[in-house]
Amino acid sequence: MIPLKRRKVTTEQNASHANSAECKFPDVAIFIVERKMGASRKSFLTRLARSKGFLIEESYSSSTTHVVSENNTGDEVEVWIKKQETEGKVSSSSVSLLDISWLTESMARGSPVPIQDRHRLKTSPKPSELTPVIIMKSYACQRRTPLKHHNLFLTEALEVLAENAEFSENEGRSVAFRRSSSVLKALPYIVRTMQDLKGLPCLGDHSLRVIKEILEDGTSSEVESTRQSEQFQAMKALTGVFGVGVRTADRWFREGIRSPLDLIDTGQKLNHAQQAAVSFRLLGVQYYNDLNTPVTKKEAMVISDIVEKAVKAVLPGAIITLTGGFRRGKEVGHDVDFLITHTEEGAEEKLMPKIVNYLENQGLLLYQKTTRNSYLESKDGPARPPSNMDRFERCFSIFRLEQFKVDCDTSVKASLDSSGTTDKNEESYSGSSWRAVRVDLVVSPYSQFAFATLGWTGSKLFERELRRWAGQEKGMSLSSHALYDSKKQCYFRADSEEEIFSHLGLEYIPPSERNA
Image (cartoon, rainbow, N blue to C red; front, side, top):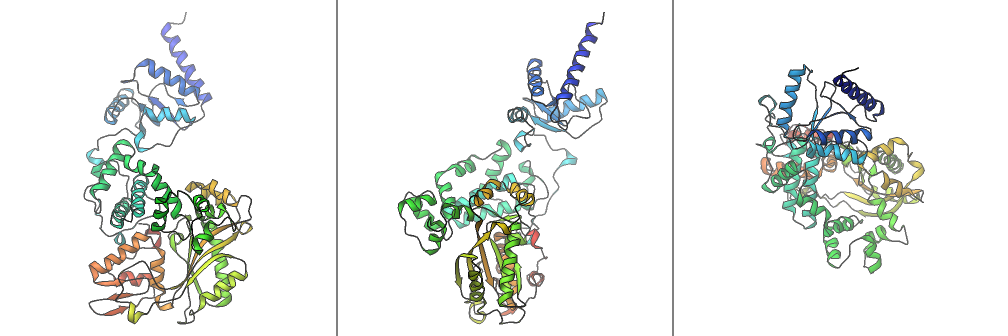
């Protein structure tokens, strides 16, 4: 007869082979730590996980990718792993140390869920693993801030609070949260403990409390309650209406209005821009949905071709530059901004009416509001305070973008999927051959073009910090029109953004790293 012990091993090997054969996720090899859990609970979880197609290993090995435990600290599990490696001569491998919640959530979903910070077991930093000391400069315009960064789970939370502060017209508080968020975006590592933030600038007490709660609990009660509040949701919806600012939205909220539909139902008096955005007679609710659906980079390129054709038809030799978030490398945006000029100073004067007339004749404009250039350098330049508002000739418009001009292939859908907006885009075209898109056209004299390009590229906080640096550190006044030295009482000319940075005594930062 076969000894009982050998018979048991054979059974376990067969179970292991069966598990491998039925495994749906072969790249995820899970080992469940029995310590503090007990043999019966581990056996139950093993059977349940295998029944759902997960690969559960009988013993810890070099092929293990995920170690799951219950009621253990990360340090305790690390000690246990070191012991297994020493006794079993298992080669060390990179594994994720996870709480049991990751496995239970994965089984409920039917596939491995993305690992979040709350799933990871906390471990004490080793002397060789301590976060490197980062010398972070206090102005965002001194830092390189990439579009994709390591701390999205923290910055999104802070920006919810910043947006809520804007709705309350508390600009100081909003800027404080955004500056904190900007610092986290510039970090070359993931923040895992509060120690990682030591010595960093612009992190106020309120921001630090929120960050600490997220690191410890996985979420912030203040942020979540803000997200779910009726006022926050209503203000987001109402300020999403074209032509509606915070004050108007707040007044509507106090009058009981919660959504654009309520504007129609209650018969609110709307100005021309607001009527264009919510009118059922023109475009119905779909119009509102379009303007709140992100514009893809591919759609922006189609609009760019349309604008270039229109501008050059009325002013040959004109220069057209796509600015805003798309110039910084974003894949989606809420509108499309263009800066227009001509190398011959003065050739751009009275250009906007001609462009608008051309676009209207082509049936491309649903709405437009044009303002004239009111900037006079000799009068306005040095006297004007640093501001993100300029006085260029401009046209705020809503384009009618035909669907057939945008090849809705997998590349467009992929860019939408990355921002979680695929369904919205599909909805915006449903039952219609076109969608509405916000487009801003700005005309600048060539002598101001470098300043205009810098000002209209963003981000909003980066530009704010540039003006603050100019005023507080250099005694200068910077706008999208000019740079004025208050001490020398003279203007600095510039033919490029690089020259402006040089005048300000700053290292040049390319558009792709201005995402503060």
